[in-house]
Image (cartoon, rainbow over all chains, first blue to last red; front, side, top):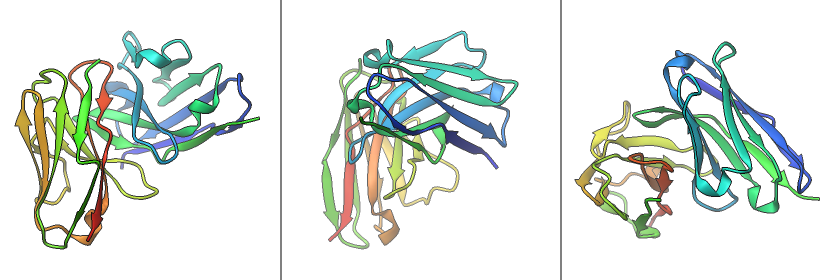
Length: 116
Length: 107
């Protein structure tokens, strides 16, 4: 069974950094592109970015490129999202997702709240 | 960036009815379009990929169509469990972009 489990969320002060993790199981992690998507409270889905199998290609949505860094550890079957200079606009549920035909598996999401 | 315009933003329909949701891309995305369903408090779930391919386990009352810049999701014989928000996403070019969503409610 494919499982994606995000962790690392919580309450963080404005201007600080936070690193999210996504533990993958039930499939060959190093065969797939992986991505991050977020959803602000009551809003739609926003694609953050994606990373290919060997981390040689990483794409971001332009508005987040200077704040967020996606990485992966294939030995640990784990995807990461490093977030810096956080602001209230970054308050959201953050999902990791596997890129198969579309985003075919999603984690349960982790809440990040940016507030003083 | 490719802009995805989804319509309508909300929709109210009766059980058994057929509903259609539209998605318009700002440029040709060559059928690289996916549809997702998100039930309240849950993660999104892939329904359709490559414009018209049904994901495993998705009921056959869901179907997708379209080409070029215009795409649609059709739900035949609406069931109560179909009450959700539906999103389209283009995966033709980075940044991959979502439509704004369609909230489907029962009348």
